[in-house]
Amino acid sequence: MYCPACDTVADSILVEFEAPEKDSLAIWSGRARVKQQYEHGEPTCMQCGGILYLVLPEDEITCPRCNKGIFEGGIAWIS
Image 1 (cartoon, rainbow, N blue to C red):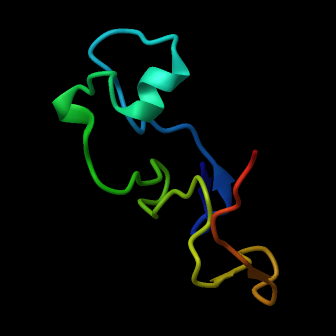
Image 2 (cartoon, one colour):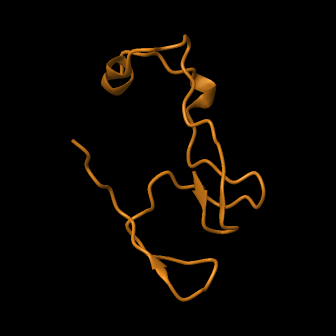
């Protein structure tokens, strides 16, 4: 995941299941049971506490490196 606040890429647990699941269809369809303690809001950066993004949001984020460029977010569908 990406943290625009400190310009780093970090690993983060988004969801943990009660049992290991090898069937991605079970995960996408909601059949895999999620551990309740891991259902939480937005993941945060361990370095700075900023919000981590897997996909950039639809609103604009200024580039932390040059402070001029703008990241354009949104969801892209893959088939």
